[in-house]
Length: 455
Ligand SMILES: Nc1nc2c(ncn2[C@@H]2O[C@H](COP(=O)(O)OP(=O)(O)OP(=O)(O)O)[C@@H](O)[C@H]2O)c(=O)[nH]1
Ligand SMILES: [Mg+2]
Image (tube, rainbow, N blue to C red):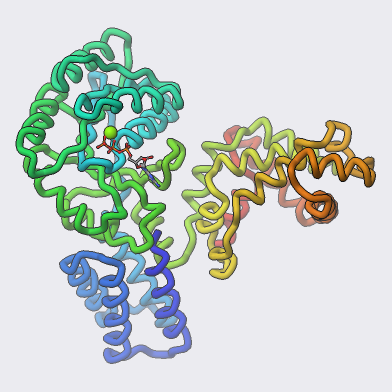
């Protein structure tokens, strides 16, 4: 997401860096370039106007700190104002004093409501809550079944029945009370704002659900137009926030930057793929630094803490320290990395990763190939690759559907990696992170935690 915008800002700031003092003319020129970049990114015209004006005031005013170069000053101001446009503070969700906390999802057809419902249920579970999913989409025949499959995937029960959406919602909440679920997520049918009958239905669902939070689910790929459809929903329902989906497919970012101002409500969560784990709370400040190409270490660290299994990490670290890190451990580490998302997106969040590297296509199939090769080895071979002779290499290649040169490459790279890890630098960093982790007692990825200090 935001690829084009990030590229444009990259160019604008690069040109700025060579400059000394910035006069009004230079500032004006930069603002014009930013304006064009935003419009090209499909940001709503009103939003662009406001944003540019706020940047202009601050860049030509007295707010020039001496410690920063002019280019850094502009970047700082743009970063802060982009954060404001994206909603300023991160959305804070608080729980109903008398459970269950009820969340209602509404939006256009195919926006990603059902997917988001399951992902949200998973997120609540991670917060230590006990959610219940309620399937109130009786419009599309397979809708409830879809929710049940997704619910099973995240280990959350789904309530539904063949009555009508209002009754399903009422009974779903009663069910949550009966079995002691403290969060209820109601998935509703996709509807067009012009369909008055269906708009009336969702109004009646909301009337019995009395939701603590009503989220408008929007597909980012439809750009600022989809955001406008919020108006009709906002008239029928009292919206609290937006769930922006499919940001993985939105190269421009117009929707994300327009939501707050056009809908009048902030983005609460974003969805970055079809899987329940591709879903997270939205942080305006982090997104702004991502747009400006400053990476997003915080999100990465958070995700790592959530998805990384501390025991496996601990074991790997022990082995690293004692110089016994094997292909078996490497395989475990790969599994863990994969849980943080596609490698490309993980890389995109690291600051200081050169654009060429960030954009170089990483094929997750390459990773799959490496896994297949390791899986085709015997345990003894994984522990000590030195025992793998020529004929075994051939067998491993055919067993994993690769070639002997793939196998040779992996073995050579692994040997180099082992050498590198034995060198004091890597060991020291790992050991330091290990100590920190023990103090905290939580889930931490050593190498990624250290990446934070790159900032
Ligand atoms: N790439 C990508 N696909 C997504 C994302 N969220 C949902 N999808 C896909 O979009 C399609 C529609 O998602 P649903 O969750 O069924 O949408 P919905 O709003 O419930 O649709 P209706 O109930 O028919 O209105 C599915 O194929 C999802 O897998 C996302 O963040 N990224
Ligand atoms: Mg649905």
